[in-house]
Length: 274
Image (tube, rainbow, N blue to C red):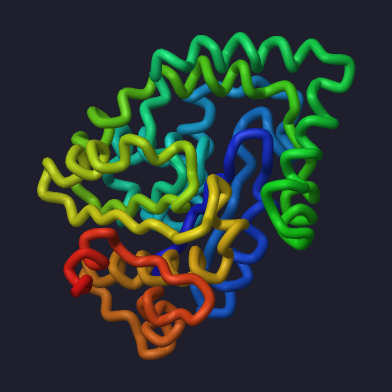
């Protein structure tokens, strides 16, 4: 069975994936969620892009050498760069909440703000807690907090991730790519150009938008995101010549059939419109 490697967002940890790990386990799919440098159990170490890529490389090696890589926000950018550097390890990539250029001209302003917050007496703990309570439900807030928050990592993250040329990275491999964004995510402004870059190699690349979801889409719409994940896993297995069994097909049914949250490729929504 093709394993899954899950990469968390900035300031969070592997525990943000608790519900997805449970879904994958129920489907019989092996999965791991490492802490990236500077996060979770590795707080106190410095975040570097090279260190993050090495973490993913080692995680994939540990599960057999090839995997479906899934990342959200910071994890999505790391997953994109890992796929470019180690294409032989990636059977497919799900890149969520990372459809904007990290080298944006706005980055300088974000970096100044991040460094300023790091100098606050609480390193921004109160601000972080306020955002968590406002953005996710109580269960998701518990999952986020379980691994602790890396409050002093944002400056390093912005500097390091700003080195990634996302479009060029997407052009350097041809494994399947699924871009997943919440409808109200502020990081989806360049999703079309990133989709085009991924498709330029002939890769099977798609875009899924989850209505009413925000940036933390896996936590904001966990059922919908998990079904998208299972569908991506089935597609990656199919691309490898594996035939997913009936249980996987049932668990990974098209998200458009879900009663609570509908998420499907934007191209398909247009095609179905009257």
